[in-house]
Amino acid sequence: MKEKLLTFIHGWILYDYILFGVSFLLFILFIILALVLRKKLIVALFFMLFGFASLVLGPTLGYIQMHKYLFKNSVKLLSQKKLHFVPALIVKGVIANESKFNFTECKITAEVYKVTKNKYKNYLFKLKPFQKMSILEQDLPKEQTREFKFIIEPFTYKKDYNVSLGANCK
Image (cartoon, rainbow, N blue to C red; front, side):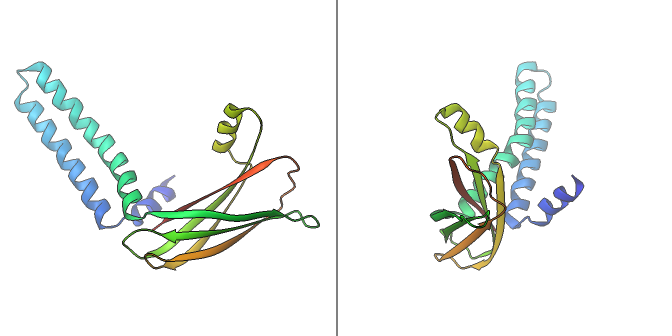
């Protein structure tokens, strides 16, 4: 857990530091306002609640939305083919950099999950794929696309399946 947290913090950019700093300053501001207005109990409680909400929700939602905007990309599945003589699945796709920044690294993930006729089970199967693989693509300039290929092995599943692709770029 400590290692994951340190990796997360080392991956921050300048905008992340600004976001977390502003969120902490808002928290301090709302707590000070609550202390100043402590005679008015309802208003003080409102500012306390708002302060803790800004401390928790500000960085969380801000980080997610900011990275969606700053590192916008799209991944398209071109083809998927199950090999017959080797227990493997070949997945081909294209990643496009749609942001205003050059990407130094993109982690592209392919997930394979079961498919049934029940739409509720399909939703649950998407949350827990039975096979997952990731690759790293380096240096993707802005407004450029790049093709990639996965070879997922061993792949021995015999029934219906779907493949979904996703990317996390920095």
